[in-house]
Image 1: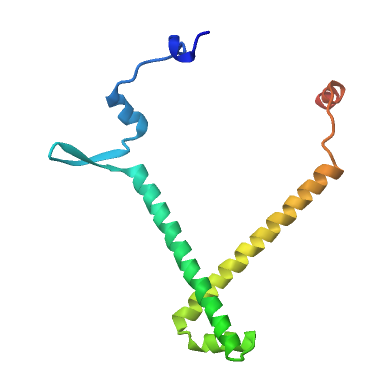
Image 2: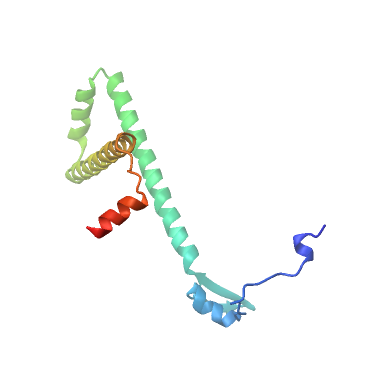
Length: 152
């Protein structure tokens, strides 16, 4: 029994060997040579930099969200321990915020509301599409219908 690694590799008919210099044009020059130190090349890989920036942004948002939720939880617990109602806790906390904090809270609340609205609309459309697919299945077209519509 032959194994794949024991046979010769079959290449497509349009196969062409590409040199390393031409690969730079195919890859788009992803690595930028910054210099050489002690015989080692120092390169800047643009793809890795983009991935790093995306990861840093996501981690910053997750950390900020975690601290925000922790602050909200601690505020609610503190208000409950002090005998305040949820509305009283909100008003007490709202009075301690400065103008920029109130504006940021309003903006984030608006974005959260818009996101929730989009999710609800998406769910409603999905349910409508599923219902339409079940109730009104696509008609079966045969050759007779296709020729009748083409002649008309």
